[in-house]
Image 1 (cartoon, rainbow, N blue to C red):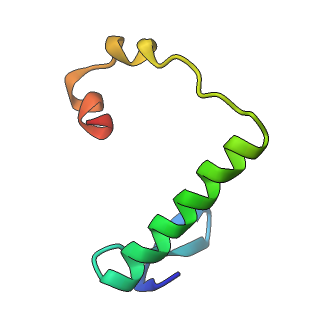
Image 2: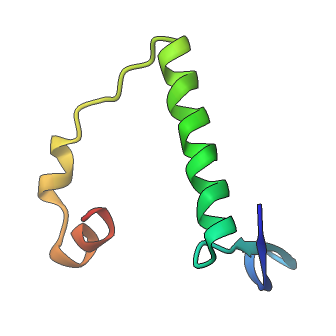
Length: 66
């Protein structure tokens, strides 16, 4: 993973680096990770749940899932 210089606060006094997704290497690392997660779901026979509950979200919140 490629990390950015700035940190985000995750808990009191503790921070973590943001992942760089704007570069090709950062985007590629993220894609590879998601492919691995998807493959793990297939191996473990995990099926996603129904997400109809998201229809009740506010417009501002729905932007996060577009």
